[in-house]
Length: 109
Image (cartoon, rainbow, N blue to C red):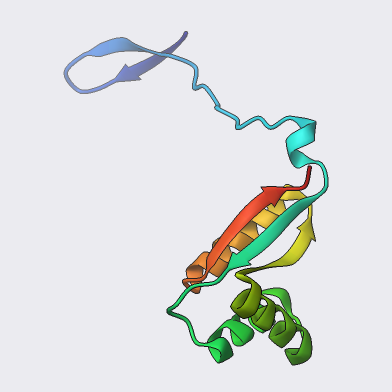
């Protein structure tokens, strides 16, 4: 503990404060290692043109590649859009959720 001295017009005293603790999220190397997959699942709500546009915006895919993934989702129920390290994969999933798409993150076993 660390003592701090203060003074005011009425009195002087000492305040004792505890050292702040910093909490860190820890992940094992295995959790951060390759590969993680970003998967989009089919839903009955979003239009195919909208899904294609989202894939282009989030991943920077050209229209042809975005449409290929959209059709895979439409006909097969899901598509693996991206594989790589966990942190960027988590960001992609959050971005897809921001566009109201059903997306998950899965570790490749």
